[in-house]
Image (cartoon, rainbow, N blue to C red; front, side):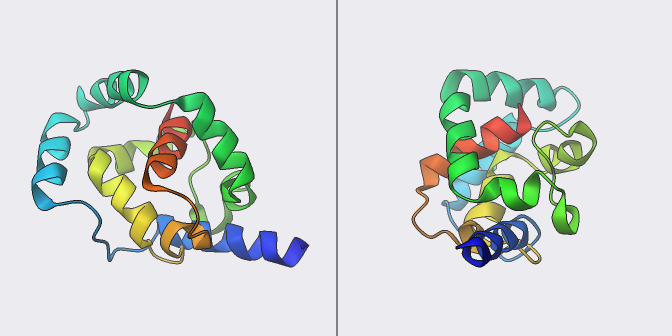
Length: 132
């Protein structure tokens, strides 16, 4: 059981750091990226999160889906929830890019952190929690 949890956590880290993604239509990503960029965009993303996503659900899913195993400890550079210095560069790339990285995998983190049962909206709620 413990090795399964560690495997899932390792996979989540891989999702965050992998560069090959495809999830949403290009138009959706472009509009989200244009609307939520850094500088004043960080505020825009936080406003969007408050209006569109359920951070408390995201926190629960984060804890039960295996995300916390890697992200709470920053394994392989995984950004911790609320760790502004690591999230700032990710936010600068836009909301769509962050979500695509989680869904499709990023660097060493596998798609959906290795937990294929996580829905896309759960992923967005988890990301909203981690950024907030």
